View 1: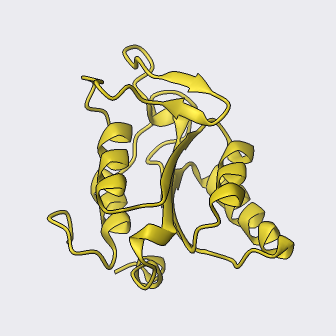
View 2: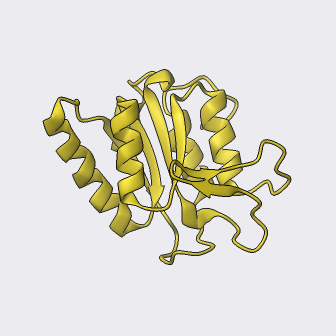
View 3: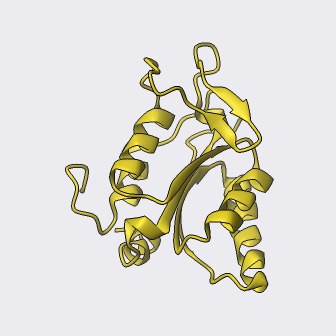
Length: 150
């Protein structure tokens, strides 16, 4: 098991958030709307994309929230507002590195540094990217009793 996943397992899901990169959406068919808080998936979406599957899993496990962000600034704002003790972050290597640094800087503002389980994208690019969904699920369910647990 990944060391960060083991640390995340000690954090109750109600104290975790899921951060997903906007570039995971299927750009040609995604009906979601984008606003200042991120991509807002339609409840009746028929797309069944990775964003929807991971978001639904996180929320069903009791996660504090999910943010589908267009960039690091939006994700950091979400973290600052929700003040999680644990984060599962799915993004490209560059955004993950900048995000970890940004979260550590937030700790200087009276916030404890949360445990971060980083799941990198399988390819760089800002459109129609992919993630190892099984790895992302493994991070999400760390320490949880779930049919998705590995």
